[in-house]
Length: 181
Length: 163
Length: 168
Image: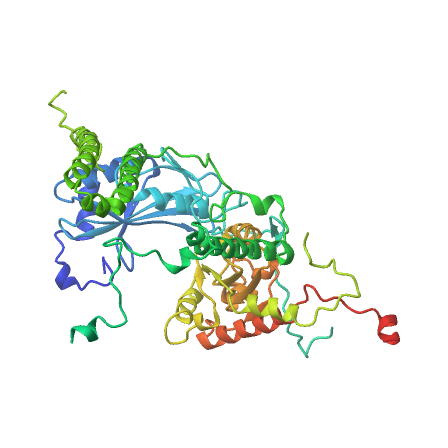
């Protein structure tokens, strides 16, 4: 379901997600790579055209998407994806956009100028996955300490042995009887 | 009945003047004897303070080191200066307060001896003196009032009207 | 000028240590250091039903005015540095109660990357109160155990040397 927790009969969306993607394809034929999905329909956007697509979605009176519900990142083995969950309070419809980025140097333009909710969300993605957002006003870590090495939510993250002299391993005092000690 | 009433009581030959109290008639006390009570209180207060500070010097552990003496900023390393500008209205209100507090301090002795002035028949003289004193200071109060220095939050005039 | 640890052997202090310790244990002002869910139980321990204030313990917001620090909740590595600074800024004599599993050993989140496994990696803890979260009665017992520990402290009394004990 498009927006979890709200029954569809109350939501009464103006446009289905697929219709929104059709409208996007008419306008940006080269940016939309594919659309469709098993659980929820999503559209994969080319990384270069993210800002134009999002600005069109916000300013177009038919889609009028004025709320960025969530922006998050996913680390697959071969790529990093940034996922945008969008919602329109005016028309009460929602859609999902995904952007695929390479793992070596994940860089993408920021949508903070379009929806200011993206400020902290992009800081979190930068903090935990290492995706740099160009044009962001305050690109720094938000959850981890400022001098933390590495990006914790990546699949190849190795926990440091100590942090400022505090060791991150705790020996268990329980003596197991089945092991020799 | 009149004899019963006047028994054990003699009319004072000196008229309306009150008798001095027996305490002040005794030979060993001077006119400063009424200050004994504040003296005792002061001494007790000083002993209390000495006990507090003395016990702290004797019994309290004292381990100062640099991190302990840093300015407290809820666990973060302190940034910026600890001195801030404060609003000048505190100074103005304090100034006005001091003036009128001193005025009240001057009125207290007048109130104490006012009954004697009435008995001497110079009631209107005393009253007019103290009223002139109050009037002079009242002029100052009116000045401060009109100049809007008593307003805690001054209303800023509109942008259009230029004063 | 301090009398601590300076009295010579021939000075007898009989109940002075008990008096000082009794005064200190009956007025343990704790710093509100509720970090996570244990903070709710800490608030309830100070509440009306299980009242910790009948033992003299009242909450203070500042480290400078408290002599007990009850660490209630998960301590992250980012917070551990600040906790150490706050502990350093408390005036002596100061005590620490570690409340709940997360501050005892990292608790449920011991394997997480951002969690400091136990507050005793940064601070010297006097009493550990286990639980997730510990009931107010458990925290009250922890406070009473800390009071017993305070009563056993020696400030003025010194150990009598064995040869003196043999002579007397």
